[in-house]
Picture 1 (tube, helix red, strand yellow):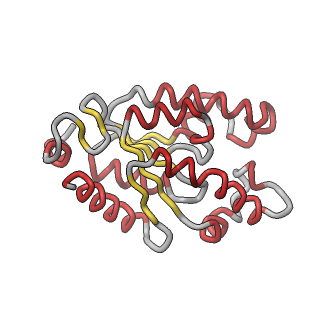
Picture 2: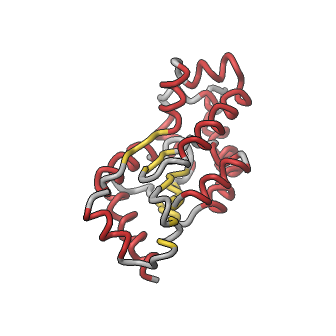
Picture 3: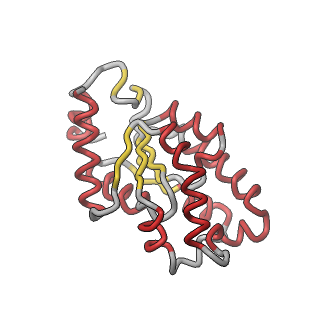
Amino acid sequence: MTQRHKLFWTTVQPDRICGVTKRSNNIYLVGMMGAGKTTVGRHLAKRLHLRFVDCDQEIEARSGVKIPVIFEIEGEAGFRRREAQMIEELTQLDGIVMATGGGAVLADGNRRHLVRNGFVVYLCAPPVALYQRTRQDRNRPLLQVNDPQARLAEIYAERDPLYRSVADLVVEGNRQSPFGVVRMLEKRMREQCSA
């Protein structure tokens, strides 16, 4: 951990640092597909001098296939089992910024691991914006339906309360660049820490 990162975190409560315990300096990004978790996560990790991990990319790297192939062969249930194992493993690491998959919050166990082991940030964007960002992406198995915009709205309605239930901080990132979201996130985390 760099000196700058230490200073950022040690300016607040010594026992519990804004939802991040002393043994875990982790930040977990949750939110819908297309919310910007991976892009924001990379930038945030770089600014805080932490390691960035994308849960979905880790699953792909270890399985040797893309997520749509896992969905095709094992179904969503098979993918969710892999995701739960990966989240359990990754939340044991220290000093990471992790982008979770959009459906990671569906499992109680995943939510518990996230809440216990790090500071959870919900990157929130409205379904219309999410659709604009994901409509050309064929690597979104849940959106390969006749009306992907309606399906995205259904998924959002189901998951939004779950994201909010685990979030230490909700960041509305619809109209900002990833850099703007990172700056806003840093500011809001500092404000929350000093409150």
